Image 1 (cartoon, helix red, strand yellow):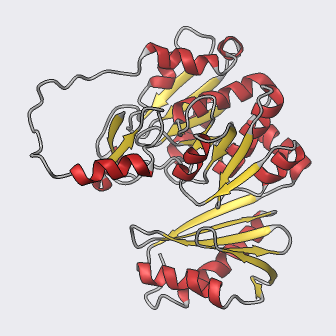
Image 2: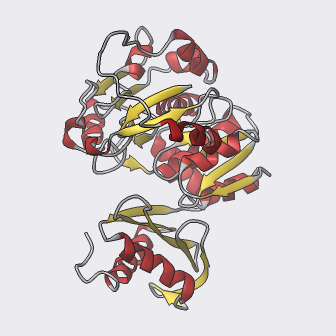
Length: 374
């Protein structure tokens, strides 16, 4: 197995640990239950003797190259910028593209345990420097990884953020149509409606799981998952690992661009034209845990008939409270179980609809929070 010391996509003060099992993914609850009773039973070791620093082994690179059309990518002349957020992704992507026709440069690739003072989460506003560098350099894509490089974030050729709902949907299309791979599709509760819509059109089985990639990883140990993903940037493919890998999935994005010869904006527009247009927003509200839970409970016990001037069709409770509205829109309220944070997610066919529904969601939360929300 393996042991990872990391704050993941969180601030440095949240440093913790992850246990990786022999199959390359996160340890199952059964494995963790054997480890936890031993914690604190021995004195910590403080000496540095015997600690060896090493980078990824060559067989890792050979493996991920075998899962893409490496020859086509290296001859494509793609130009990309990588934003590693001072995390363990470092200059790995830049290094593997040396001596190819592609131009890959890295920003913030030097290791910094404080991550430059930001949350190393690969989404806006943290990706604004990446968007600026893509525009400045005339690159086709910007690729980002989080602190421990298991999550990814993408910006298009104009420097605009490609949200993770769009990324998962685009890669599903790429794996099925361009690579000819098959398997079931898995998404977490806050992922896009596009995913089951695309999967259904191909006759693929679709699984919906609670938020957190571990629930998808457990499924990947049981069945072949063509692709599975969460809203927060974690995407996995059974042919690689029952786990997220931001380096590999970023490479898969380049594989998609090389295979299609199209820009990300073109690919998104074509996907929307075929399967429907969707936009997304997420807000992380700092409210007491009791307040967030009260919001979730209110939707489960006494939901209104309409919300944001739209009929409430259903309220799901797989994880938090997910309010399905008419005209293919939804809003999800989910209280973190570990910190005073209420996350609100929203997807709808137009940007205006997302703004209207999200604004109504924030007003709804304010009813339960006298101090307001921020």
